[in-house]
Amino acid sequence: MKAAPLTDLDRLCIHTITTKPWDLPTAAAKFSAAGVKGITVWRDTLEGRDIAESGRMLRDHDLSIVSLCRGGFFPGATAAERQKAIDDNRKAIAEAHALGAPLVVLVCGAVPGQPLSESRKQIADGIAAVLDDCATTGVKLGIEPLHPMYADSRSAVNTLGQANDMCAQLDSPYVGVAADVYHLWWDPALETEIARCGELDKLFAFHVCDWRSPTIDFLNDRGLMGEGCIDIRQIRAWVEATGYRGFNEVEVFSTRLWAMDQDEYLAKIIQAYRDHV
Amino acid sequence: MKAAPLTDLDRLCIHTITTKPWDLPTAAAKFSAAGVKGITVWRDTLEGRDIAESGRMLRDHDLSIVSLCRGGFFPGATAAERQKAIDDNRKAIAEAHALGAPLVVLVCGAVPGQPLSESRKQIADGIAAVLDDCATTGVKLGIEPLHPMYADSRSAVNTLGQANDMCAQLDSPYVGVAADVYHLWWDPALETEIARCGELDKLFAFHVCDWRSPTIDFLNDRGLMGEGCIDIRQIRAWVEATGYRGFNEVEVFSTRLWAMDQDEYLAKIIQAYRDHV
Image 1 (spheres, rainbow over the protein chains, first blue to last red):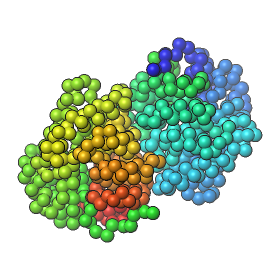
Image 2 (cartoon, helix red, strand yellow; image 1 turned 180 degrees about the vertical axis):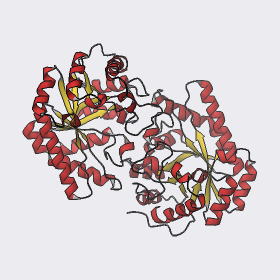
Image 3 (cartoon, each protein chain N blue to C red; image 1 turned 30 degrees about the horizontal axis):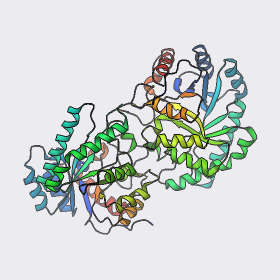
Image 4 (cartoon, each protein chain N blue to C red; image 1 turned 90 degrees about the vertical axis):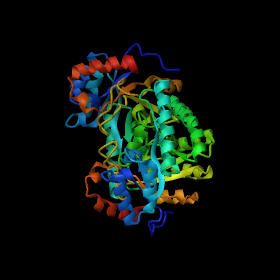
């Protein structure tokens, strides 16, 4: 059974990268005026800004700060590279804390040519190395399994099953999963692994967009919901069957949509949310 | 433990699509002169030719005809489309029989927006519908699980585990698997599923190439072995641990490599086979 249409915007969150041409104050003002309730902040939008003040500005717009994107990229060919990644993740956790974001989303990383099993070990080690910072600040981490087409250089965690396994292995209240339909929709084990993620109490975030046919760019040709082949309402039904009632986060990277008038695009996002999420 | 380097070309097969600029007689003459022992024939190279005579020509060059590429694309939105696909697969089986190819490789198909579970059912039904033709001719079918990035429109069978399941379900001596490192290398279950494929006695073919970082085109940017991040010798070791002693088939789609002088490219293929397969 598919999920029923969403009749309000109470659980609509938009990632700042989705409307990339807007800086943070513009995105905050526009989202808020349109009735959007949540925002996930990408770190590039914080450059040159006071982070605590940015957090206050977002809350003044009645926006929930859902997460900070992104940490991760733990694997490295040398110990120095891996330490640099750990330091950057500690910085991300501190930024999330200053901003008032409860979650840092992790794109876990991979090194081309390094065995995936080794990268997975380095990911688990890297996450373990920053858990004290999570405990101190209360900020959680969301492992985002990435589509297998990114296994060479972006993430050696490519299925929800692997992310669940890693959560079980790390066994920390601060480590869970950010599930994105773009990365996971094809997986024959998806329904089962969403249920398992729920049983583990690890479903920390849910991202939506769509897969266009054909897709013409590996990174920046995602579709707005309804423009592609993903059965988002089926997946949302599985997600909500776990008890998840968090935000539905719209995360779209699209050269095509970034080129649009962003006010018109925001209206399209909201319509697509009502019609297809 | 990784596989030891191959010291001869006895198990080297090249797909005609790899050296796409060459027609079939040219490919046959060049492969044979270079000491290549096997050829997999793509159907486009047979257009306008007498197929039985083409088979004799290949055997006269001392080439083993390893397989015919390709059948499949069984899913369709209408019964008429699905019947058309079945008819085309019957034609492919007849062509393989006329050519003297023991195997037809299947790119199973998918319809954008149709549930993957429905496409998988249509694939199994489509294969079942042509099994009498296999029994009559002795031609086998190799289900090729395709990378998840092709789940929208090319194949709803995206892991070796799914292909194994489908073989077990169909339970026919004529149905097995064509395993391609390009599609499967990222899968955490790969070693286990290769072993299972062997136990089922279903490993009918093994294809090699490489995954470039970055990859810039969804179809035609494969790497020659050694140009990417796939640990081919590790995967070959798993394949050979099942008892597989068939051909290692070089299947590369590459706009970049098709633009090379194809004689120089053939020399590079053979060197890459010795150095990286």
